[in-house]
Image (cartoon, rainbow over all chains, first blue to last red; front, side):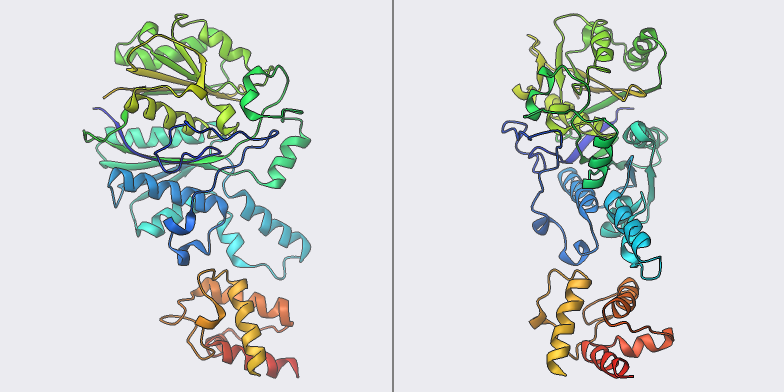
Length: 354
Length: 85
């Protein structure tokens, strides 16, 4: 059975939310902090619903709404969300009030919103959807776990239209903590220069991307989601190469059949060598593309890469801003996404032409 | 009293994040819950916290809440009455 991506909504540090611009006009960010470009929320969301939404909820609900509208699906059979950190801002608001008011005058809204499954819950409330609703909080595997659940539901014929997405936000405090821990790159002037940087640290990002997975063939579908594999703390390069085979072999594909590879290179010289070693397995003429200079590093950033791959497959073009290594391939049939989060959570996602 | 009720209306709009409403659109006697402004039980909890934080008034008996939160005017009267006691 083929699993199609039939709709997408992506809110990111680039102007991606309208599904028109495909990284033609790039937003460069100063320093090591990439916040999303806000869509016109008031034009998309009901103001009455919006009043109880903080930034991450607005991001999540809006990207889900854009995705469903594009797929022309009003009621998904499941809503599956992946988030590593959940509603950080609301958790902060609640905990700060808890600390400063000695827990006597706590407002309920921040507490209610502070749980990880708030975004999935708000999407369900908006749609009045009582179907399966699950949120995966698995650090660097949060999005992949949600995706796997969506794939399994379709394969088991437990639904025809599954809404799967990822959402993570960055707040002043979470950025400050990352900075304090020494995770961030110092002195970077322009996020687009990320791959020229030879230094430790990352640029932090955030975003929300939702996908409508369906088992129905449709001319508007973007691409086929043809493989997914997760690898936790691989001990050797051989394990990573084995991971590649886990997604290619079931499709009868070889390394040379991959037309482009999207890697999660994030400019951190301590961990980017993993990508360099990974690429050695592939023919040198395979195109290599990057995305973290566009959206930053965060636990669920592979959702941005999946959005990119699906659009590339549908539009049969590679935006200039993503190219790390060019290729002469005339057709984009198979794109492999390889990402790792802090060298711990490694994932392989294969996207193919319909 | 009316000036106070108008100020209170603005505070409620801000506190409950009723972004789509202007103070002029909310009548002092309009019902706040149900078919009126459409506030819900979470808003009721927010209003209880608001009264305590802003005016130092605690609603001891939750049964009273229904009457107190009927409209902006009933809340204003409740505050005036309890501030003086």
